[in-house]
Length: 213
Image (cartoon, rainbow, N blue to C red; front, side, top):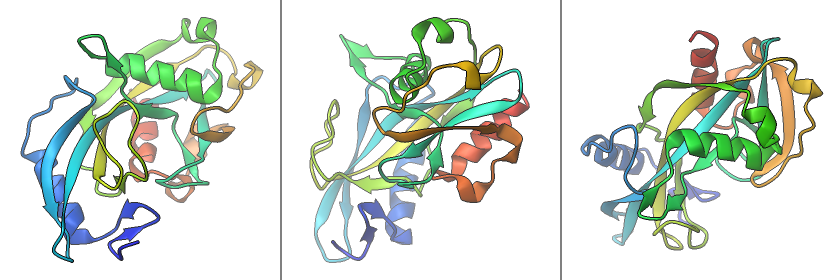
């Protein structure tokens, strides 16, 4: 693999800055109108050019009455093997795309096995605005990215919107099963989580936001 990628993650600071600049120069708003947007061609240090995309995701900060939150251990990069919030890319729908709120709840169900009846009791609150400046999450696709126009070997970055999903009671009393991109489920006091524990740096910011809404 080229030296500006490590394990399919873009690590070249100049290329990261160029991708971020393109995200900042276009107003995609909080609720995107597509699952991904074309950022144009990026020139690589070896003289080749590669297409870049901005894909859109949502994350869920699940909190209970005891101040505990629910994290997954990631199967894939960014941060394979580390902890992260449940979340993932928005899905396309007929003549459009699902809302960020729908995506956050769906991803919690898919990655943790959270029963729909339990989630129906949640109080869901949006945490600020969609995050577009995420240089640590620019990936090279190792195959065609399902549900998006991203093709193998192209690069894509990910914007995300976070939601606090507040549930009554104790998360440890809910039967949960890791699935999709989750290797395991971890329930911990939210205030005890450290930046070094997290696969994705801004997930700790989302947890802090959820604790102070």
